[in-house]
Image (tube, rainbow, N blue to C red; front, side, top):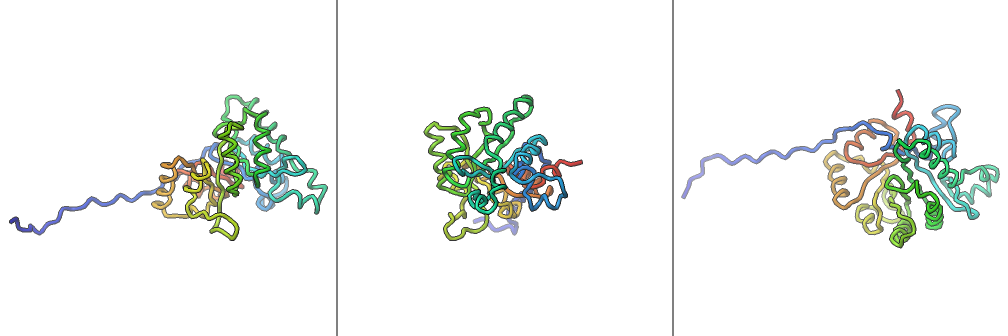
Length: 269
């Protein structure tokens, strides 16, 4: 029998995974409701356009970034507003009448792309609040085929809406990807999001889009999360990131898109 020599074979150390921040490209960025929501714009000074307005969205598109905006259906029209426009109509009819219409946004983006054929297509994250609005968006997109492609997706917090969009897509209505938005721990009446990757697979979503606070993980944990999503064919975006340092870290981790109130600051001199 061999005797123990007193030496153990050394186990190679496990290499620690680290995130190397990456510089953003404009194609990585979605301007939140254009160039930022009203509360953020108030801090930037006068002259900033109102959130979800055609002016705000056009300014972001002209700057070269993608856009994220909110769509509701009201009185048979698709209007841009973060909260239910029916409530706005009751309290401020004048403001309600001035809300941007989705077709105005589609026409603006289509015109930009036609005038700039050598530039990438404008990324569109179209947030819908319910299935009625989603159906209206898809119906309108039939007339704007030039806006379709991997750069355009319908996003929502509502799983029933996303399931409905996926069914319509499979039925050949409009070929468009979806993204599952989620934020803090689930509240009563809201779906649990402890395993958003599994939820995305179940409802046919190609993306998950968590609140950036849920991505405040160690490098190892964040990279593992991104790796698992990639293996399942699910991309990850996030909102709303107003720190350039954080945005570059998230890109370095493999986050596909970053929504921000500060698109112009991210690429300023």
